[in-house]
Image 1 (cartoon, rainbow over the protein chains, first blue to last red):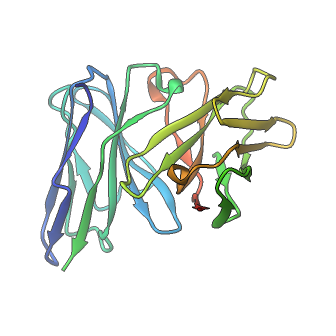
Image 2 (image 1 turned 45 degrees about the horizontal axis):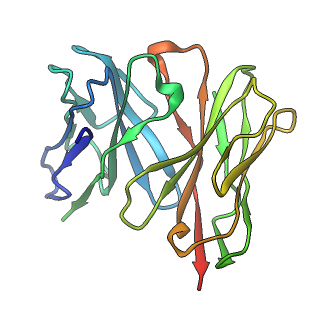
Image 3 (image 1 turned 180 degrees about the vertical axis):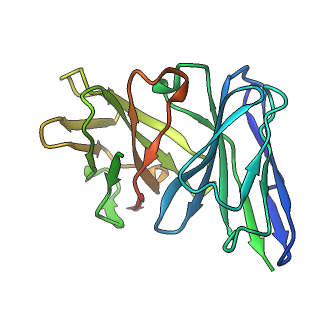
Amino acid sequence: DGGITQSPKYLFRKEGQNVTLSCEQNLNHDAMYWYRQDPGQGLRLIYYSQIVNDFQKGDIAEGYSVSREKKESFPLTVTSAQKNPTAFYLCASTPGGLGVYGYTFGSGTRLTVV
Amino acid sequence: AQTVTQSQPEMSVQEAETVTLSCTYDTSENNYYLFWYKQPPSRQMILVIRQEAYKQQNATENRFSVNFQKAAKSFSLKISDSQLGDTAMYFCAFMKANTGANSKLTFGKGITLSVRP
């Protein structure tokens, strides 16, 4: 079945460490997105990518980095510069130019700083 | 920039009854799309319904319908015959039209809906 796979489901990070969240899709979608969800804050856009080897910052990109080397993959790295990384992270995708029909979401990764 | 406001953080409804979730938005755009997403306890985001701003007719999907008031910039979701499985967080979201590959969703803060048996 086609869909978006996010891994791991739970991730723990020590202070000062970089961690990478995986997002893979087999929907042949061109566009991919990363959102952060905090209680009472809704979903906020971190980064998005419309095509391979191209990506743009969203509203809260500081402390995060991404890459888009393959159409299927859009990993998110949470760097040590992100001061409050504990949150739920959601990856999404849409066919190119067809985002108006809504996004397909992954099941999310819960990141906790220990 | 667009903003989406969901002013009610929580609501509760008796099973089989009807409930309306409120959403307002602010934009200078004339063409756009509005969405309601559901996030159950599994945290999987599910698209409930979408509305195209240039269509006056309100969208419906089975038990879910919207009341879209463009002039008032209001987009409420009505759930009829509420079921226990409707218990979830509901997010209202906005997307500008004609952005092609740059389609981005702006979300409200969400509302937690509890359906009581």
